[in-house]
Length: 569
Image (cartoon, rainbow, N blue to C red; front, side, top):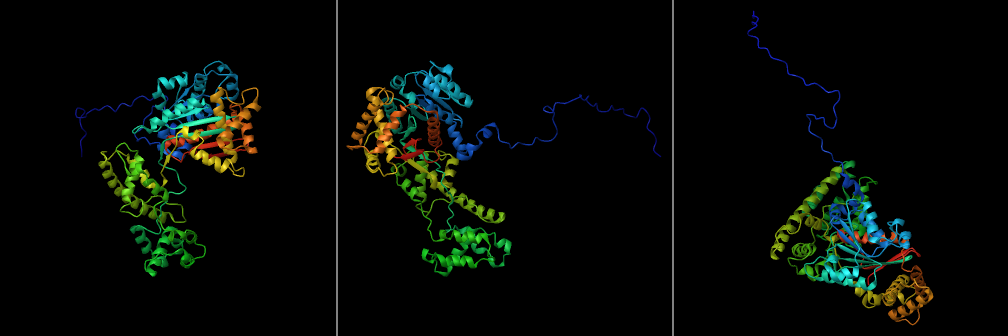
């Protein structure tokens, strides 16, 4: 029987002291033994810009947040344009004008208050525009633009984009010439210029750019399914399916793409390797119909509807071939634009491949989740294979011009390979050429202005009326419509247009355009300013983000007729 230990053998230990609990604990400062759960909620920035990120993605937003925009001249239209650039989050804007705020400015411009009267309009507009987005930096420069152009020309070339809003024609052309010369110098980045004219309900937007590379035009479809030229894994998969032994559920959820590849393989096997031609389209579709187990299998109906892809040959898009034939794509240097280098590499890649790299994206189709994912993974693997091969060619191209292998960002390479058919290069013309009544302007006059039945007749007439008004401004230092005799102003503009067009008599619609432009007096109406400001910002965002095809190069806005007409001059 065990004996009880003596008192001297017992080791006395004090219990662990429990800390005194407070009456309450702040939940924020409380801690637990579990690891914190990461939050996948978007941050404040993502929530603010959520909808626009769906349009131009994070890459476009990054470009936007690095953009510096200059506005020369400041009226309601210019402020509305800046408003629509400040809200999506450009980095910086500067308003350059030495003008003072007038009563008319306050009456038409929402970004000026009665207290602004007599103050510099740039200072006042910047103050209220900055309230729209605290993340955007705004600066007012109250110097005379003409004086600054002579003393500090580098000031104008330091921006990403320049806007000239109802600036004197001579000053506007001087700024345009400076930016064109800067953009034409090898190694300098292109600084586009947007010229804005507004007279009442009539407006004109003109864009000067030397060369603009669009990395993503956002085409309606980026899919390169290559049904007529399936890659080996896809063809093997399609041939391996035992369609006859499948149950009805599995059979009715085979992706139509796989059905077409299988039908095409069977057709070629039975026709000495030849694909069906257009004249045998009905026979080919009938083979698809016979493959149905039930009459209501939607996947087979989709296959029949898309059967034309089996006899339409996949080939290099015409737009891509046109880009590859450009001299600055064929002959690249270390200072070439990344898009030129990528296109040059694609040209070399195509010397050993019939088609550009495949895209990993697939369209929606009637399919089971398992079948769709299987198909999608096959396209992704083929894309990765094409991408690796393209990168190896690119490394050799970069080495040949003395650039390191990482000179082009990986994300840019991957984006190009995914969407090589969605890029574009736009070559513009100087603003001075657009103002001369020669070349494309002369062609537009002969084609549309001289023919009253042409749908663009009125737009060309309005453009000529604005050109005539600019000449009037240069000669008389005031705008037509601001004098006491507007009838005389109209007659002067008529004679000027006759001289430009070579016509001895103007059509009635041309006279209407002149009257409307003169009636506006080159003042901004709030409604017209808001509309034109939206168009300007839309095109500015295209230029800044290098996404979507920009205007090339002129648009006429007529809010009397509620029309916009774009053409190249």
